[in-house]
Structure formats: structure tokens, C-alpha cells
Length: 326
Image 1 (cartoon, one colour):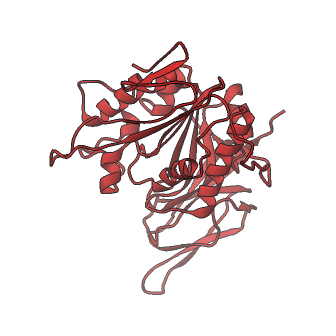
Image 2 (cartoon, one colour; image 1 turned 180 degrees about the vertical axis):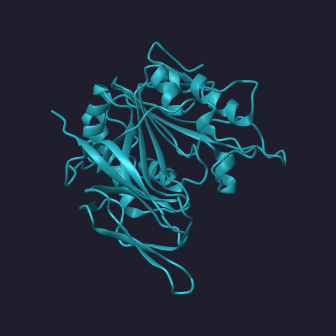
């Protein structure tokens, strides 16, 4: 169990005093070859008291862009706080990361087994260890994800509606979009919510891909959030985003009416008007050429980049109702 006593952080058997840096091992099980796996957790503490912020990524093993964001936070020294504590877990699902697969070797999605069990499946044991040995000492969590295979997400934050504390943190983070979405059963986000632990979920890019714009959005957002909390050291610049975040109350998917070869004409993040051309679906024989047009005005927050689609496949995620914050 993670605890803080006499201002000493006790986590996974290690003691970290104010002003100390330490790397502890988040190990659950060996590989099938009996080889051990070191899953480092990087902990940086300031001598000055302050919040404890946890940056996580790699809940899904194929979402490498989130891992890259946390890696850069560590490599650039952004994780060394002016006050408080910063904990970085770049790869939670190391088993999936080794195989570049979303799930664990047993096919389970880690983000659907929380809060886990010490005697359950491998994924359940990892979830339990995270919730039992790390989360109790944390005040704020930023969890980095990417879009599914072939679907590119514009950089965005996700959390449940009507949460003033998360609204404040989201405004400080400054991602291009904020999508209000319901908490999903047995997810990491929902479990933290039930414990009263504020969590911002960042989505950007697509699986098996590292995108510079998405990476910069995540790193710069983390810096702005740390500055908002008084934790960013003065040698790091933290500029305001070029545009205010777009808060999304409702959105819809545009789906394919035909199967065929697909090419999008717009990129994620584009503002469009009703009737605008979004892309087209063709067949290999030159007989079909179906134009996909925008059913309403809004922003494109996700684009299917697969070259082949089937009837009913999701092609574009478009905002339908925005929220104005007072």
C-alpha cells in the first residue's frame, strides 16, 4: 500500500524523502521464458511541499504516442518539480508493449478490469497493484492514450460532464478539444473517479504511430498544468495555447454507406460546415465514386485513415453541440 507518513512517500517498498529522486520497479509477473520484467516508475520529489501528480501511459500496449509524451517529460527534466511530487509511469501494460498489442497476452483489455484483483487474471493483478500500491498517494492523474488502429484523434481531453475541478485543470492544460464522455464501467478513469481522484484522459493520434503535433500538445499541456499547480520550474517555458480549448457537449459519427477504398479529404482538428466534402469511397474497378459530405457544421475530432472500409464503418467523428464556459 502506498502511504505518506511524516512527509516520506512509501511506495512499492521504497521510501522517498522530500528532495529525493528514485526509480522503483512495478513488477507483477515474469515473461513465459521466466525472464523478469523491470517496469520503472520514476519518482521526483521537491523539498517544498505540494501536490502529487501522476503521469501514466501505455495502458494499451500499442498506444506508443502516449508513451512518447511521458518519455519526453522525463528526458527533458519536466518531471522535476518546483514543489510537490511527480510520478511517471510511461508503460503500464508492458506485456502488450513488448508485443505491440492493445491487450494483455490473455486477450484482456486492462482498461476494462479495474479495480482488479490480487488473485485474478494477469491484467486484473496489474490493475490491482496500480490501484493499491500507487494511486492512494496521488492527488491528480493525467493518463495518455491514442486513437484505435487506423483512426486518428485530434489532441483532446476526456472526462465526465459537470466536473468543475476537472474543467479548471482542463483549461490549464489547454488541449485543442475537450470531449465530455461518460465514465466506462471498470475503466481506470471510472475507478479513480469513484475514489475522488481527479483524472484527465488525453487522447491523440493513432496506434502504432508517433505524431509530432500530438506529442507537442501532450508535453506542452503537461507543462501548462504543472505551471498552474505551481510545480513547473522557472527554466521551462510554458506558453498559452494559440486557441482556447473547444469544449464538446455532443458529437456523432459519420459512417460509410458503401464498402470500398476510402480516402479522407480533411484532417482531424478541421472546422467544417454542413455539406463540405469530407472524403470519398471508391471500388477497385472504377465504377463507384461516393462522396462523403458533412451532415452538420462542427469540428472533425477523429478521422478514419484506413484505406479500405466496410459499410457501417465509422469514418469521421464530428462535434454537434459545443459548450461555452462562463
